[in-house]
Length: 231
Image (cartoon, rainbow, N blue to C red; front, side, top):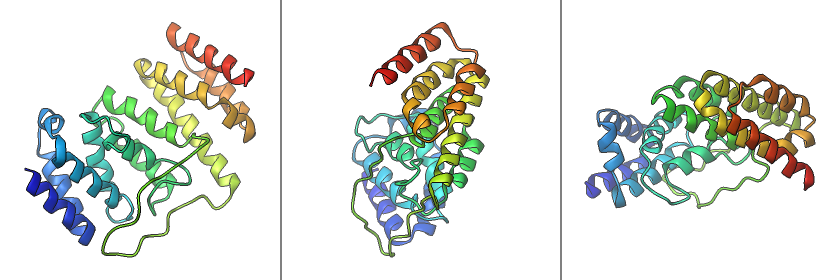
């Protein structure tokens, strides 16, 4: 109910370590159809609570796992829906969490098959957030605790290494699941200039050559490369 969701929201902001496992247990005990039907103010309150719980090292895994389940059964069109919140958490600089991006990648590798094709396609989007050239994060800090220090790479070399790791991950996903390769083609085509600017054109070339693209994926990749080169 809405009142239950509001109560969990209040507990999440007051006592994150208490709320996170309770929310995960409740959602994991719910059928996918019921998660998809969970909407309106109830879902809003829950997503806001989970966004807060992503900040903390001790509650990140539980919060991300629940957001993944909600994102697979997404029913909102807001930018800050479950899908948007989880995707933004994989930005390199403005991830909205004290958890390092390498550890976030570890979480993703552990859970990318939780919902089969649906979660693998979503994983492509999450890795894609790590390849953004422009990052943003909205909202002001709320909660009973001081805001944790947001994790950021120590230097540009570390950031480039994370771009490369994301690139390699989506290449593996495309090869493991050909149905996901069209999404990967879209992603790496849009990331061309990032890889050029960071000296990682070799990674781009390797990814483009390594995947057994569908006809649609190959055409999409070629179109995006030509478009980027014209800019």
